[in-house]
Image (cartoon, rainbow, N blue to C red; front, side, top):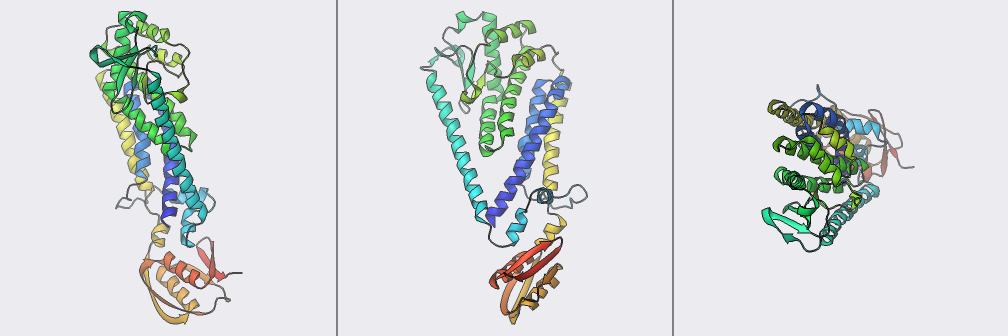
Length: 385
């Protein structure tokens, strides 16, 4: 029962998180143009907010005027709902096998991320501390932030000679903006999220879009703070765009060089920085969107009338009476339509107190070697053939 419940909840979480990612990807560009890249980045809150709402307890007020149940939606779209499986007794082995496969995938993905990060850090060689808490390495060509809990800025050993003083100032400002905003930690959390949903290619695709939006937000922040021209900032971006490693080999952190097409990053520099009011409005809109999704999913996940009926508690107390009569008692107490075959015979003793009617029916059916078949709102009960 618990395996079935867990599997059903996770199916809902996958459906909701995928829908949230698609919504964010539709909104992110219009939000950038209207409220700026910094506030548009907040739209990603929609994904965890909507997904976590699936796991929250159903609200204590009537939600039926607003939305139907997500379980009903999935039950109609998927062959053989998980709820039906749970009513027929113990879940099939494929439920437990699916959960075991998911756990194994999570562990493999987590191990892959951790191994990749440690290999990348080792590839940097000895990191020499420099002024301002900046570390230097012989094996990097552009500044980067590595790590999550203890994020550090890494620059090339010849950073001061490779780039002009103004370029150095812009690059360091960009990486320190990542530190200030906590982007490395946010990216680590997103990587952990992609491990949980390792089977969903949409989550891996969204991870790259999230990292790019972090860069755009830092670009906007740096340009708004420094007195340098946008053309010079764009020139600095172009200067370091050399062949780079695959994003699959990247560590947890933030990098000056982007794996996303550079054109879009430079195009964003053409737009003027939004004022405080427009920026605050964009952040408020993104937070309101996440809060609305949280409420909407919680309301949609509330039990439907059919599920509330399935959870109705009944008491059946009978001593050595006909099985057909016990089934009639269950039908009368639950208010369900139960049709019993003439082939059902035998007597049974039942003492069941305050349990869901579906469980009571399952116990009687299994103990007598019977089978059930559902057709709409009618339950047929017959002997096993």
